Image 1 (cartoon, rainbow, N blue to C red):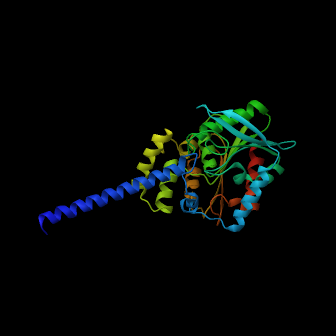
Image 2 (image 1 turned 30 degrees about the horizontal axis):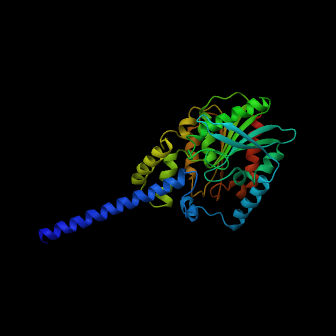
Image 3 (image 1 turned 180 degrees about the horizontal axis):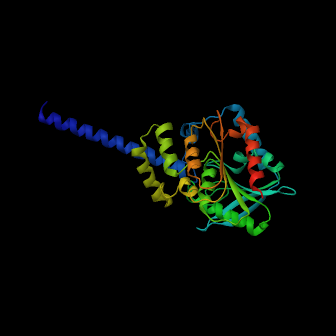
Length: 322
C-alpha cells in the first residue's frame, strides 16, 4: 500500500472512531437526561421497556392503573415540607381510623405514590396503617430539577419522619416503606438515628447504589459497556445535579443501621436484579428478614404472591410494633 493511501486509510479510521465516540457520548448524555431530569426529553416514552427490561403484561398493567386511580381518588390530605436545599416537597396523608401504626411510603423512579402503592394500600389500611405518601423530589408535585437515586432523597425521607413525629407524636409505631428507588431511599435513610417510635423498614426491590443500577442497565438492558458508559454518565450527573454515583450506597447505610429490615424481591426482576437485595441483606447489621418471590418481575411481588407478601408484612408488624 502506498504511503498516501495508508495516511488516507488512517485518517478515515480515526474519523470513524471519533464519530463512534461522539455518538456514544451523545447517547449516554440522552440516557442521563432520561435518568435524572424532572422533564423527560421528547419522544422517549417508548424507551421505558428497553431501559427497565420489564413489561408486566396487560393484566397486571391494567390492575396497576385501576388500583392506582382508586388510591389517587381517595380523600387524602395534601401536605408539604421544605427540603434542606429549599425545595417544596409534597406528600399525601391517608389516615386510618383507630390507627395502629404509620407508614411512610416512598415510590420508585419515574413512578408515583398511587401507582406503586395503589394495590397494597388497602391491605395496609385494613391493618390499621395511616399512610403518608411523599412525591419524591423532582417527581409528581414536588419541586426539584433532578432525581437523586436515593442519594438526595434519603435526607428528604428523614425530614418526612420528623414531620410525622412533629405532627402526630411518638405514640404510634412508624415504618419506612419503599418500592424500587423508593426502597433504595429508605434503605439509605436507615443510617440515620431515629427515635424509638421508628420501628423498621420494608424494602421492596431496591437497588444498591446509583453506580450499580446505572451500570447494570447499561450493560444488560442497553448493551453498552458500563466500563465506558458509567464514567461518562457519572460526569454528566455530577455536572447537572451535583452528586456522584459513588456518593452513597444502601450497603454502606445498612452496615450502620439499627432498624429492623424486611427485604422483599422477585427473583425474575430484569431491572433491579435480586442479587442486589441479597447484597443488602448480607450487609444489614440489624435484625433482618428476607422474602423472595419466585417468578416475580420488578415491583410485582405483591401480585405474584399476595398471600405470602401479606403474611410477611403482618408478621413483621407483629414482631416490631412493641
